[in-house]
Length: 417
Image 1 (tube, one colour):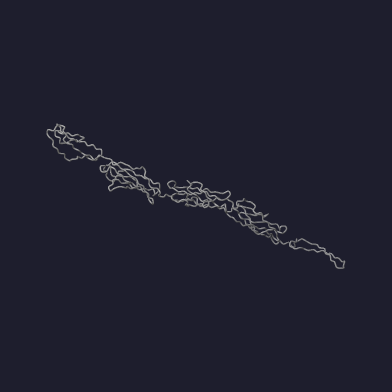
Image 2 (cartoon, one colour):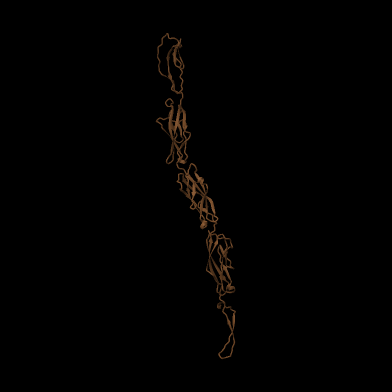
């Protein structure tokens, strides 16, 4: 190649001149001094290389071997490579690109490494060729799904319709493709199978009726798992479902039937009987108030609206009324309210509070002076309104010389001698 003639190369030529019809020969020596060598410079086979490498590969892993060519001889044709970034480097001697630090696709997925090949020529100076290495970091399933919230909380009325969506959970995965495709399942806390989770969307639905009076709170443990092989899973998802009370329970009386007795002479305000009802709901839905029904003006009993205690509000008189039957209603404060009713019976007991009274204020009679001793002359009668009362009789004045006697129980008066 004329462009690469050595500066010490000499050529010796033997020249023979001949002339037609002449035998004269002449020989000579030609010395030619060649030109100085020109440094042509290196070049890569292609200007841009495309290569992929899995993430998490260890340092010194081989990525690609680059090769530049230089037609020069000696130092002018000897090449050194350079090119480095935070993750990749090239061996200066042989062009081998290798991993310097473990690549992480989630930190960076694409790298561009600029590589230079420098010859060692001096004339006129060293020459350089440049190539670009485009490196794609391939995903490995090295990230667990992460829930968007540490704890999900939701309130659901107990009368929510079946198949209603109550909440949606979400977990994301920093990987890509199937490695980032998250699915869900309920792994604990789903008492009686009340809930269902859509494995792809994370939507949680009620699939069986809820009952606040049976279970007031559910703590669902949720698992999120990706589509890697093998899959990575996160079992830390927590969904707290609080069932909200609906006024669906009427008050219920306890210890029925309500029956009591009371002495007729008890003071006003005396507590006779405690009316008690319970309500399976909560809050205002379970707060009860009481009232009496089937009463008339002057009714002698009242009820405390809050406590249910029935007390004496008017004076009692067994001799006027000895037995009361009336109604009581327990009503909650729900919207709308619910109520229940019961019957109360109270018997008034007698107290000896009535004086015996004679049927006549004055008894008058005539008797013969010759009446025989023991002759019955009169029967007096006294009445006592109290129950089971026994009236006894005696003469306490006017019986001069004890001429008369009276039977203590019958009130029969007879003559004496």
